[in-house]
Image (cartoon, rainbow, N blue to C red; front, side, top):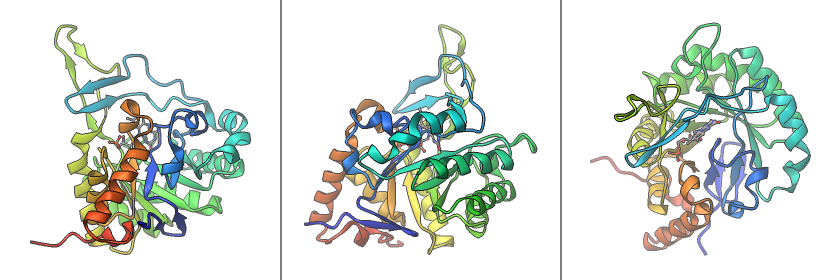
Amino acid sequence: MIDLTTMLGPLALRSPLVAASGTVGSVVDFVEVGALEAYGAAVAKSVSAEPWEGLAAPRLAPVGAGMLNGIGIQNPGIEGWVRRYGPHLREVPVPVWGSAVGRSVAEYRRVARGLAEAGVEAVEVNLSCPNLEEGAMFALDPEASAAAVAAIAEEVDVPVGAKLSPNAADIVAVAAAVVEAGADWLVLTNTVWGAGIDVEGERPLLSGGVGGYSGPPLKPIALRCVLEVHAALPEVPIIGCGGVCSGRDAAEYLMAGATAVGLGTVHFAEPRAGRRILRELEALCRRKAVTGVRDLVGTVQPW
Ligand SMILES: Cc1cc2nc3c(=O)[nH]c(=O)nc-3n(C[C@H](O)[C@H](O)[C@H](O)COP(=O)(O)O)c2cc1C
């Protein structure tokens, strides 16, 4: 038997796979279509303080081996979310984490409080949101990111993770700032900015022009972030996330220093992908003659 359990800071996970925010709905909606028993946790779609309508169609476009999305974080706002999903969180066969997004530190705080009161087991801080006070995305700026994380860590009693962006010029600086501010782990990473053009229609593929690019082409970029952050901050727990489609992809993130691995875009083509990927990871551990996934963590050797 391969030991699939892992630790993510204060959290013990039964599996190293984490269903990534925005790709499994509220998690509650995913129970019937997904294979939630394969995950250590599943993260609900990000929620803001007030309801957000999201952007107009088109909001999703396959591009090359990946996917562009410009959803605009459509969500019912924290009060609507708590009413709709709060009563069902305990019925879900996997720990559910909430994801907070905001356009100010006060909004992040309010959302996190609502999520925690609804009973989520952890709060992920989605820092890929424009800061109305400063203009730029929180995740680009170590100080703004730290302010959002510090407010949430102060507000809630559950563990807090910070989800960073590969668009940050210096992701190690952002990582160090949010850890100092109280993040218990990092998610590396969210989508990378991208765009596509409809040559016949003479318009961008997304109504918003630029959106988030995810799937297999993101993997080398997110892996680079994991390697850099793990080298600079070796004690900090990391969820590696970007383009994971196989057990081998998951192993790459673990070997780079992550202790857990996020699955996102793969769910759109294969909602039960977690089950297959976990089996593949187990088989890979057997081939490598290790007794558990934890034995893979940080095992990559320098040339
Ligand atoms: C359609 C879509 C919606 C997403 N929505 C969110 C979101 O609400 N909050 C968030 O933190 N990340 C969101 N993400 C980012 C994913 O959680 C993940 O970090 C990213 O897609 C990279 O992983 P992947 O290549 O496995 O998809 C979304 C991704 C996609 C494709």
